[in-house]
Image 1 (cartoon, rainbow, N blue to C red):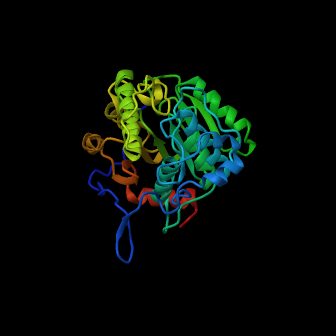
Image 2 (image 1 turned 90 degrees about the vertical axis):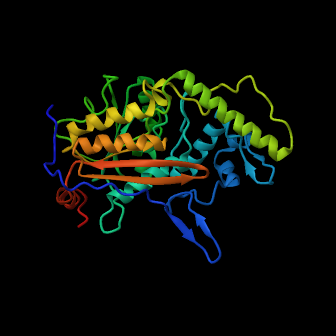
Image 3 (image 1 turned 120 degrees about the vertical axis):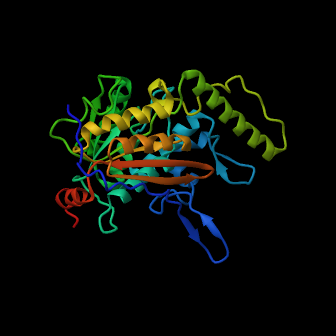
Length: 350
């Protein structure tokens, strides 16, 4: 397929990260989640347990007397996710196979809220089946299509190179018949491709999204998980004024995760470079491309590559969740006039 270009080589823009704060009478409080995020007030564990009694096995008072779970325990996190998805999004019998990535729901739905703002016309985030999104690497959890359908009613294509992941999301959909017409699962047959073999010749997508593999190797992923577990143990010990316990399972992957979910050759930076290069071939098929970027140092090479490929607009959205900062990198090959026309025809919002 020939590369598609907008022909507009002068109208390029890179926005500064969007740092959002909420101002109070005496303090400036850094916002941790998007204003539309249902989880801004934390978890209602009592309400969640009523919906999912199994969660009670993992809930205990923390040192401050508040109910919580051990977030280093994959089974606890999975049970919490299932309870949230049932209680707040009416998704029945969500589950993942042992060892697969179990992402926290509040942070994942934040990504969807921010890209909804990116697609907004006249300040209104679009809803309904006219919006088509492509989730690259949906994983066994299928979290973005599930949350995107329930939050905004969008149509999703969810792709993955792993047949086990595709089969598990299909099983979740089987338990939730209302999702069947809104989520199209596609297995990527070529592990070297991202969009090729997934986007059809006559297909159009309003947004693509992706949570790239973070690490360069299994060893690096294991080391990162061990460090997370050690930090969690040290924090718990500090609160209890005890020495941190050393666990023989400390090297286990935190929250699980298979190869395609957690690591790839070259890590996040190489994956992003591959995605950006291939995206140029589909510049007329997608209004916006986007991806999470966990490491801030990976942004600069992305900007340089996007400039070389004559993207018309590049935006970086900064999301702060607790002590963690994640970025959404979004880019479009379509000039502003074409983007407005796209919105007028497809969103019917102007």
